[in-house]
Image 1 (cartoon, rainbow, N blue to C red):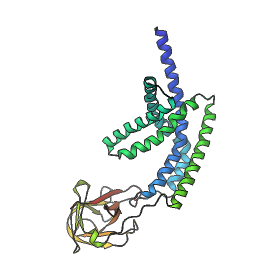
Image 2: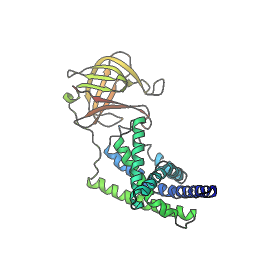
Image 3: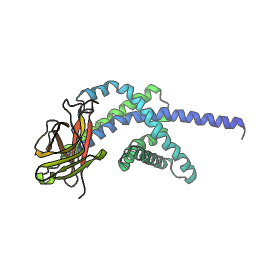
Image 4: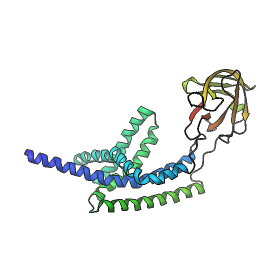
Length: 307
């Protein structure tokens, strides 16, 4: 094999790579709105900890900027998921044989597992959930990118087909999600109802935070965040860290979260009375408070300590 053959092979591989990227971008862009909708539907099963959603302003912005955002997001997903999956599938196909369509989802799963391990190690994301979500995003493009790449479609023809597929997938996901919620297949999260006896005990959180609630109504805190006078504090975080003793009582409602919890009063001048809302489950309850802006505040969580 001469240098001309090597160069020609390199140019052919480069052309294939560019065509795969060009085909993968609209395919990934078509599925991203549906993936976002499914995430939104499934999020009703999880506690949002009183965080806001920005009302209609956030979705309105997404609709306005979707034509600009989707191609960029499609490019990102293509480079991170689709191309690595194809790159893993090809050598496996050459080595072990078999149908190519079967190796491509395997490449998508391997890529998702790899990124799941990376995100777990760096940011402590849940491995199983991350790998499953990335697998879901990666399988469809790996199966369809070659078909799309070999069609004699103009770039405009490719994108209007992507838009039609996007609308169809979105409508299907919307109808299925609404039906699942109405029929109870997907149940909205409900915080547990805890009695005063169940609230009493030791609760611990990050940065050494600890809250001891005695059955007689006394409370002791260590490295515990409490609300500040103006709600935002000197560093715009909405809380200050306190230690000391005080009192607590079950609180039937909080204006910010609309759920029951604990109203804590610490003696002295460190912070104000703070409502800790109930979260978690009956077997693994939590207390939480969201400081500052509900749409971009600081969430602090306390878990019941093992006794």
